[in-house]
Length: 148
Image (cartoon, rainbow, N blue to C red; front, side, top):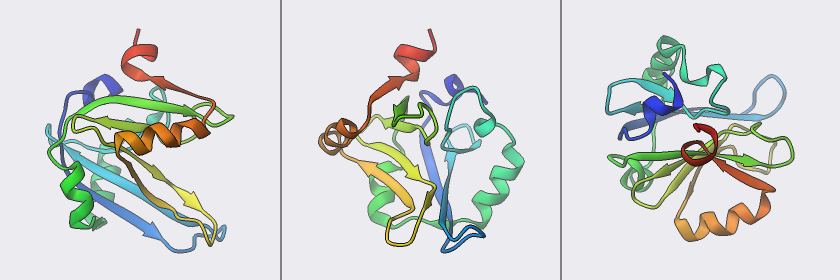
């Protein structure tokens, strides 16, 4: 799958894998999303890399994964992916992209964190997203900036 293949699809189910401490002493978190076309994806880091391929591995991780809390699922499930946003935090495109959802929420993840910080799902309302993005040097839209 390519990024343009997921734009316009709905999120049908989400699961995650979490490791409290990996070999490097970090927390580890990865979200897996089942789309309305029955494909499984991980949140991509950059649209030309392999995050959207190797579906069999992602399907296995999805099956092993844990369900999210109902409060998160209520905000994400059955919403359409409108765009992929990539943030510049100094090393452009080194962090997971942000899925812009049709209901005004923004979904991403923090894959690794040291003790005392949170590795996990990032879910922002439009207002909170506007506040959060002030911490970044910039943001690029797949639909408006990259796909062209």
